[in-house]
Image (cartoon, rainbow, N blue to C red; front, top):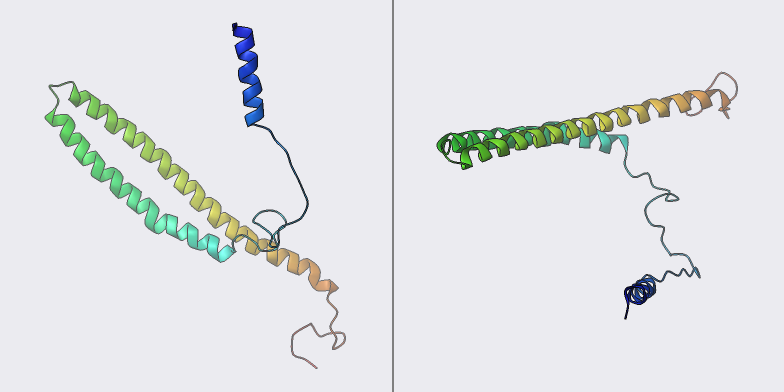
Length: 151
């Protein structure tokens, strides 16, 4: 068997393994996650709580881990300074520091995003409410607002 024949056979086998077909004959009983689901994935309070967790727990723990590793790595680099291992440990420590700083930056970005989103949702809700307020007609007559308890 030549190359072209073998290649054609392998392509045919791969195509058979990847056969795609779709059959739509019903819908699931319960909606799944994603668009079309009537439940908002998280509330502003949940976003604020996640932001606080990043600030209070993750950033502090990550900084502590970085400092602990730095102390151990620097000590190991000094002990093995005359060996090839010393510069390798020093390079490892520098790489670790860069990776931790990247992680810290990412965590801070996520924290700020969650915090900002929570505030934006709250502000947006107030804005939409104020836009609809003139449209609300009180069943109690002019000069009263809906739900103010005035007869």
